[in-house]
Image 1 (cartoon, rainbow, N blue to C red):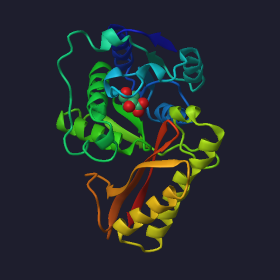
Image 2 (image 1 turned 180 degrees about the vertical axis):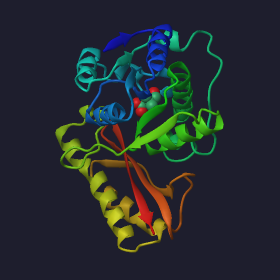
Image 3 (image 1 turned 180 degrees about the horizontal axis):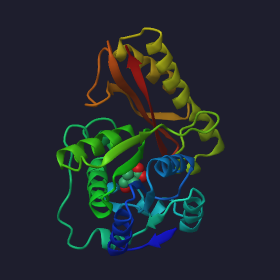
Image 4 (image 1 turned 90 degrees about the vertical axis):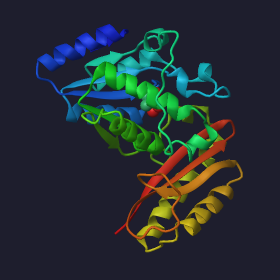
Length: 284
Ligand code: PAF
């Protein structure tokens, strides 16, 4: 496994892989890897011949009140996990290499970024779309892997790739990896105190119940969102940011689901830690 710290080096490595006829897979991450990332990497290992993992804590997706310096980092551990998968290359650039100064360009995907997490994290998805567009241009993968847990991010990246003619890069969604008790895996889980971690189980429980209700024939999504909200609100340590049921592709609020797919998405604070989770609701 190669550890490559510059845009020039990763480009050379990918070029050599491509000349050897290899299919290139990219797993973009911000490091502090957990089993969720590992499932993306394993999927990439299966679906491509040259797997690149990027580890880059992207400053432009952090808001002024979100502590970038507090984001957990452990490169040595991350490299050991990558080597164990195994992946072929880890791209770990410096901020200055990704964002030469002055940096005057950004990618903003309208509409899809306005609701859900976009409402309380202005500029976040602009930072995500910008860095992913850059990673796509730097690595030029055949296929890129993203977790379903970040469903809004996934929708934004799909749209960005389509709108910017990066549609020769296949985007693969990988199901949310969960702890045995249902908690969605996240780098932020390490911040939860034991009581907060226990309380956070209400998210997966409430979302699972919503899925069961739709499978049982419930079609009124406004009422279903109210019932998910009430279930989460009953947990004293939960401070709700949003509970929404939206159209799966447009992310616009949905009153009824007669057929097709919807997304039930939640963002909830437990102490200082804001967690997100979601589930896909399907009606035939
Ligand atoms: O999901 C993440 O870890 C980040 O948002 C991503 C896609 C690596 C962009 O920085």
